Length: 512
Image (cartoon, rainbow, N blue to C red; front, side, top):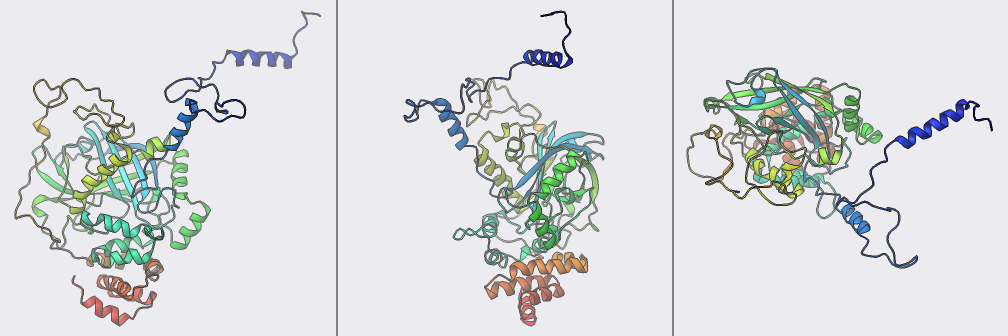
C-alpha cells in the first residue's frame, strides 16, 4: 500500500466528520427526579423473562407516579388561557396621585407577564366561544409584584361577591347533564337586573374577539391611588389596543373556530414570532375622594361604566409583549393573579365585588398550587422577600431560629407603608346599594351601536334566550332589555316570539 498517496476528498471528509463527532461532549445521562442515573426506559424490571413486574423497580414507579400527577386542578374560571411576556413603560408622572414607583415618572420600565383567557369555558375549549376574556397583567416592580386583573369588557354581571358562586354555577355546565344550558343562565340573570349592562356587552360582537391582540382590557373595578401625603384618589384602568379593536360576528367566529379552534393563541404567538410586537396603551380615569358621591350612579359598582365625557381617560404608559412562554405549564398554567397583590401607593376600593375577589383569587391559587405558590418562578417577585411564612409544600425559606416578630427579629416593619385611612359612617348592614340604576347604561351602549351591531346583538341574544322554556324567565329578560331601551326590548321580544305589548307591561312594573 502506498501510504504517501493522498486521501480522496470524500474519505477525508468522512474522517474529519468522525473526528469532530468524537470530540463533541456526550449528552447528560438521563436521571430520575432524585438525580440518580437511569439505565433503561424501555423495559421494566421483571422476575424472569415472562414473570411479573417487580415493585422494587423504582424507575418504573417514579415515572408512573410522577406522570399520574402531571395535572393540577384546573382554574374554576379563566381555565382556557394564553400567556406572553414584555415590558411596561411609564409615559407620565403620576407622583402627585400615587407613590407607586412603576407610575412615578416617564421612562420607568417594568417587566410584565400577561395572561389572556376565557372566563367560563374549560381548558382546551375552542377560543371562538362567546365569553368574557380575561386580561391580567403582572408587573414585576422594585417594590414587589402588582397584579392588575381585569377583563376585555368594562363591566360585570354582578356587584356583590356573595353572588359569585351562584353566577358561575349558572354559567357552567349542569351538574345533572354536564351541558351548558341557557335555561340555567337566564334563570339566574332574570333575578339580577344589574346584569343587563354586561349581557349587552357580552352578546355584542365584543363577546367573540378576532384575537387577543385586538381587544382592549379593563380593570373593571375602582381602585385607590395614594400619594406620599396619604391623599386618596379613586381610579379605573383601561388598556387600549394599538392594533385596534376587531371582533367576529357569530358566523365568522364559528367558521374561524372550525378552521383553528385556538386561533387567538395562533394569532398572538404568530405576531410575536414575526416581531410584530403587540402593544397596548394604559389609561386611567380618576375621581377625587370628595367627589365620589356626585354621580347619578355609584362609581364603586362594577356593573357600571365611568362615562368618558365626564371622567376623561389619561394615558400613563404603554405595554409591549416581546416573547412567548418557554414552557406553557411553568409560565402560564402556574402563573397566579390576585387583585389583592398590590404595591405601596395602590389600594383596594370599597367595591363589593372587588372586596370578595381580594380573598377568593389568592385562595383559589393556594388550592391549585399550594401555600407557597408565590415562590414559583413566574410568580416570584424580583425583589427579596423578607417574612416569617414557613413550611407547606415546596417550602424553601430557610428561616433562622427567630421566625416571629419580636426581640432579635431579623425583619422590621416600616410605618411609611401603612395603609391609608378613610373615615367611616353608619352601622353594619346587609343590603343592596342605593344607586342601582340597572338599565340606563345598557341603553346607552345599545344606542351607540351601529345598525349592524344592534342586529348582531339581538340575534346573538335570541340564539340563547330563544332556547329558554320558562316563559316567565324569557319575558323578564326581554323586559330588562326594554327598560334599557324600548326598541332594544321590542327587537328581542320579536326575535324570541314574545308579545311586545306584554313585555312593555312587564317592564313598567320593574323599578329602575
